[in-house]
Image: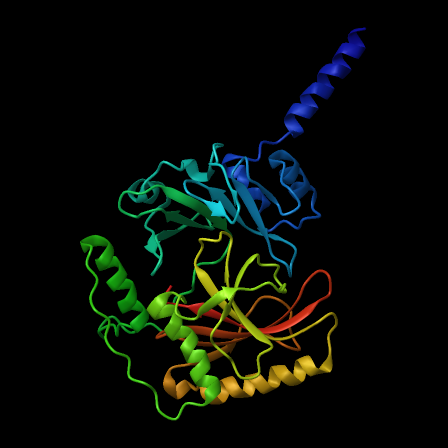
Length: 351
């Protein structure tokens, strides 16, 4: 009898030791995990996530990268968060780093360190303990947290070449836009925009891509948004929109909001899609590589490079970056189901 009691007690201890609460800092343990991993399965069961890896009642959503099948970011719902016809209830469990949804910008900074305001958004981005935290507010001055985003995304690296201390720092246009936003936030007034001089001798391809940056900067894409899309897309984004822009050589382009219908708009140009890899992918890739090289030269401030990361020895991600505008990236990707896509994605520094 005593032996049976000892066995039962040890089994009870094992269950309690092995059981794990996936709240607090443990929420972050799912980042980088594939959906087939044991940890992800435990996390999904703990939070009772549905097939889209979300739980409306508990205010949590996991974004899965369609290419790597890994958990890329965690969305925590605060106040006034809607997803189309459905709404997330406010998250009430413990959060990482002892932060909570009642914190204001100053309180978050006290716990996470100095943050940076994202231009054009009511969002403060923090980098803490190798985690990126974005806190989006209903209003930065006296509003509530609308939602939090946690990810393992790396902080944007500093430029490779830094001016010597004896030389004055040359402020980029991106820096100026950030300063304008900070001043607007502090003073409540916004200076009138300076007129932009049109560039001469631009090809239709270059003009179209520059129009993307212009639309983002001047109206957060509202000026080119042209109704909801009904067709599917490679990434399974739900909130997608047609645009008034036409990019030479495209299959289609679209605006999308992620993860919420109220999230900022981003722009993507799909060049080719297929259920299998075809030689025409390489042909089209090199054609657009040539066009980008000719239209966005180093003489105009564009720096081209192959991005590190995934093994893409045949068709690497090719980036053209300019601190005045952002970056254009020629990207070939494959999702877990074997579907391929060649597309242009944008990093918009004015955001």
